[in-house]
Image 1: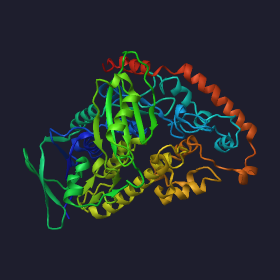
Image 2: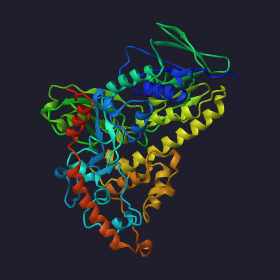
Image 3: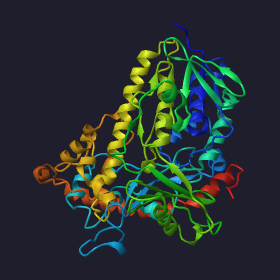
Length: 524
């Protein structure tokens, strides 16, 4: 068995370059460690639907040596404190029938529910109405919704890199992000080869022996990382790892995307992703420094491209008149076997789940971390592959449950898309079990296996109760006897939320101040 001294990453973009940079840093490539080469074609574009991230990205950027101000400037990046879901529970106000009333949105914040030492857990008391009538869960237990509603940032300009008063992630330009990662990876010792892979060679055991490129000839390594996107040039086409479609669970499989400039350079920037439900899908709206990234994700079995484009243009308004959308076909699903022999898939080659909760880049981070931590230096890839495959398969399955949760408990019945999503026949059995248990108790940590979860129990709580799921606590009510303390906590959180709005800067001002302190300017 031959030791692994070289890694060949096939494909660039966010998946390829993030993996390259992280592995180079962890494996000491610039200091005589494992050698890493990345080969990418000059004519492959960036998919670009994943402009939102999860808070884990802060640790990843820090680990590979990219400062926060450098990242903000290079990628036209902004702060993301969560997701506001508009019209997911019921149709828009102007389309509701008689008797349909209730809030038009809910918020999934990144900060955890407040629980000071000695204070009671607030969720049961919120369920029993102690936060007051019509007070949303996220608003009752965090400061973050008040800050986001005011379009303020999660931190002060004087806070350290990747630190702040509130938990946060980012929005960014995907093309610029890949370019920044490529620059950083090469500074860490990664070799870049511009070439098109024409052929993948297999050895007698069915492992990859090398790839043959048009411009650079044959390239060989001990470990191959497939970052070739939906083409899955190595893991799928060459090695035949099967792909499991999720079209019967997650229906959206098309997207139309536009880049919409601000009408004024001082336009306030939302510090959360806006997700607005449509008749047959939903629209994302992401504010960058100089533009908004807006796209419509929809189900081709429930509508057609023309109707989807009309809805997207209606959402954007006159600013869309001079713009043409980019059309994307989404292959929704994943490979349960993502590491085969001496090849491991990262990014779209391993799987794709709709970008509702920014899982795409998070899954790239997870895969890169696992490869680094489990790296088979001695060349014995089989036990590592089995461990990696179990871990990634479990993580994908749990993310599928979480995404489906957003649809499964909707009250919308206005189109077949929403009725089909609410039909238990489209729900994974694991999600059915969770929802059955949560009829009489809220989600808690024992429902989850921490190491394979991307989303903490709090995220499930925010979505479940944002979607107005009815958990009845009558059977356990006698165990919750600190209502007066809980009411005081709810009142204190409301007051602190207003203090936070006063103390934290406006989102655009925060970015300008952070860049100015570093001698940089915002994107124009």
